[in-house]
Image (cartoon, rainbow, N blue to C red; front, side, top):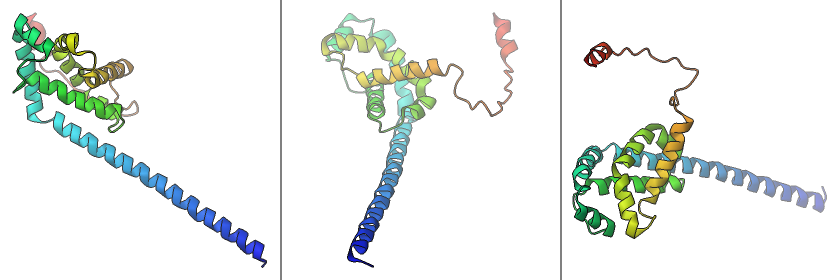
Amino acid sequence: MSQETLSTAAAVGTFLVIAATAIAAVIQLRHLRAQNQLTGLLTVLARVEDSNFNAWVDAAREMLKTKLLDQQYRLDVQHGTMDRTDNPWLNLGNSYDWVGSLVKHGLIPADTFLDVYSYRLLRAWEIVEDVVAISRRDQGPGIWENFEYLVVLARQWQAKHPDGVYPKNKPRLVIQDKFLSLDSARF
C-alpha cells in the first residue's frame, strides 16, 4: 500500500470516529435535556400539588372577594404597598409566574404541563385577574407576565382540545352519575 492510500485511509478513519462521537454526543444531549425537563416538571408538579398551594387558591378567592371592595386596599395593590406576609393571592400568582418562566424558556414542556393543569391554571387566573389589572396600573405589563403567558397557552390548549386529549383509539369507561336524578329533582 502506498503512503497516499494509508494517509487517505487514516483520514477517513479519523473522520468516521469524529462523526460517530458527534452523533453519540447529540444523542446524549437529547437524553440529558429530556431528563432535565422531567426533573423540572416533577418539581413543578410537586409544588402545584402541595397542600399549601391548594390552600392559597381557596384563601386567595375568599380574601379578594372582600379586600377588593376596599378602595384603600386597591390603592395599596396598585402602588405595590400591600402586606406581602402570608398573602395567598401573591403566593399563587408568583408560583404560576415561576412556572410560566420555566415553560417559556423550554425548561419544562408546555403540552405536558397543560395536559394536567390547564383548567386549574385558568381558574387561578380568574381569581387574581383583577389584582393583575390593578397592579399593572402603576407597575406596568411585566407584572406576572409569565403567568399571563401560561394563561394564553392554556386558553389555546382548551380551544384546541375542547373534549380533552384522551387517546381516540382507547375505549372510555362508562361512568354513571348516581346523583343526577337527585340533583335534577331539586330544580
